Length: 144
Image (cartoon, rainbow, N blue to C red; front, top):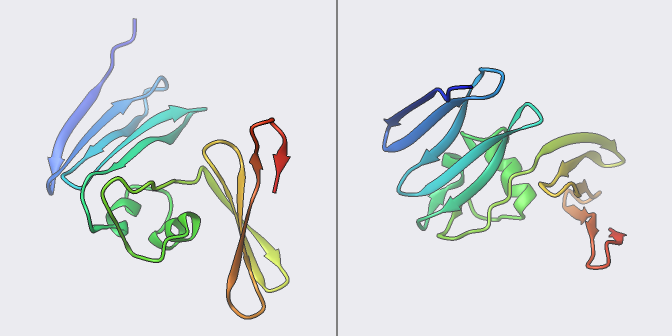
């Protein structure tokens, strides 16, 4: 019978809960503040995002990014955001992974989504970017 080891505390108005996984490694399980709730889970031996809820308006994306494996700029790019703030009930997505690929006009950012699809941010010759994504339609057909 395994025991769950848990530590909880509040740091600068943010509640944190840490737990041990099956390999007895501590990981951040939950964060909660007046602005947001974030929960994590262990998936394939790694910490992964379980859910995120924005509970207030004008929440700094930087506040969220510091708990993720991605910078504020990467989260803005992945979510097609123009602002550095989020509003209540914003649908913020966190990628599973990021890979950089050399392209003709610079590095192409390939993000893997939570559902196993891909988002590509491709630089253009005029310093703008184009976004492409793979998806599975309602008939379970792959598309881009």
